[in-house]
Length: 361
Image (tube, rainbow, N blue to C red; front, top):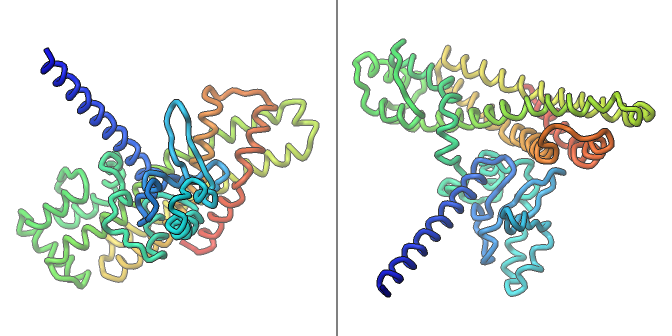
């Protein structure tokens, strides 16, 4: 009987550990795939305990350190400069860590692509950091988006033949051992036009896959966020007919300006993606090293502004959906939410998009 009890306790302990591990993986994957979360494990820090915390963007687009979060106790958030008070035994270590945290805290977005750029600027090696890559689940979600970029590649090498691939890694494996003479000839021609050796084609494909995976990731975020922005603008506009708002021209003007800003931002960033699509088609019409380098640099140069704009819109729309689950709310409650949660930081999102627009995609 005692042996049975011991076995039951062991099994229970294993199940609990397995549950904790699954919860931790969900927590980590959420951060990797998010626009507004950066695990501090991505940065080489000296202070024990900080490795399990995360930087997050709040609805005002301020960066805070999330020390813990769960359904019962909520989210424990601290502004970066207050971190030393929580780690008094590690004063020197936390001061050094704080310098890094405050630098990365100024980033407009914590998506993996923008974070890589910001961390490289701090001379931090990002190539071997798993938390700075999208999760396998997110990559699988992006398969349909990636087909836009993998299809022309398959047609170029294999003609019009339909070949089923899940992601770029499948293509790399196929092209490492092409199964048709015509495909091999096409690969040699591609290598010549890109001015690389045939053996370097897999490396080119990895780079091609990564740059367009980033575009697919941001495109999916855009496709999810823009309809929410449109719904929010309609919801906000409904209070214009209330007597309280009609009597106050300043409030009417504020509502108009917010609606116009959100619509302009959404239209502008959508236009940027259409431009990227056109430029990627141009590459397949004229494959060479210069055109690929140009499109790679173009997309990478827009990572920070795209990430920042989408991050800002996402955190605001997420809070709106959580506060007004059924889309209701009286005029006063809606107006207070717009003034206290939507307006702060909106000028930052608008300025980011305007700066990208002025750079001429």
